[in-house]
Length: 147
Image 1 (tube, rainbow, N blue to C red):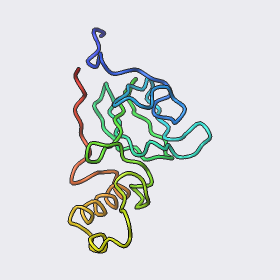
Image 2: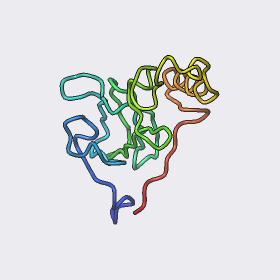
Image 3: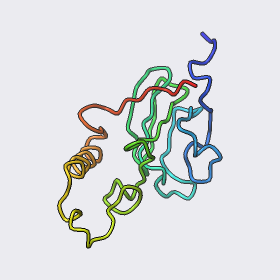
């Protein structure tokens, strides 16, 4: 069965969000394979960070971690959506508690000595994502962008 694409405004890609891909700045991509590698061409973990993958035939969703490989059985294409935080792309360093966007400023700032409620929540979510592949209480779900 074939017909018009359900995602006509989302670019199809073979190289995905790899650092040297011409497609890596897209909000979402459709990968034309069911085998997804979360590694750069040199074998390093993907710098883009965690990505939600959705099989376009089965609807199966997975939170894909950098450095891993995933197979979407029963699918021919996978919708990839980088996991975002506060409307910005989340980088690997920030997920691991390092610098990057959203990191802490000067150590001399007294307010930074006391973690905010959102900092505590973020730490809990990072631990859960690392342990279970889930962000929050359920698998990350996002809606396709319709232009």
